[in-house]
Length: 171
Image (cartoon, rainbow, N blue to C red; front, side, top):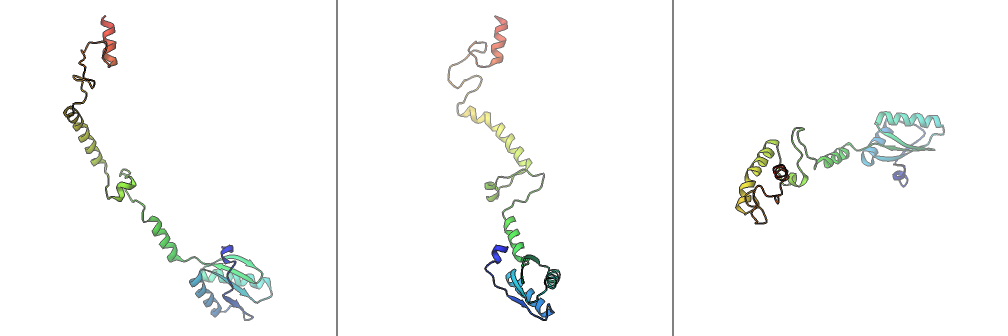
């Protein structure tokens, strides 16, 4: 904030009459317009300047950035800009119930949402469809291996470890 205020010029000057309601109103108008301002105080007493600074900050709900000699740098954030920034930050945020599963960003952008029931139903349907689809394509089954060479169930060439163990004991 101090670096941003470095190039600013004082917009409000507090003269010999001190801090009046008109001066406070002018400071308030400038804070609404610029949010970061410099105020120049003409008084010679440091304690008087500190008292003015505390009064300004209390009445106008602003914060002191820096007090350098007779120059005060004051900041008051813009509530509308902060709210707009927060809304823009949360605009792409997905809102879901804790019981709902996570939906990847690409699917959420397409409007596809997932629920546990639909996921479970989809998995059971896929499991049920696998053997039927594999048999239609001519894929490997216990009766017909993938390489096309028929195997006997008791053969030592079978790839199932359980079948090999069973043959060792019978020999």
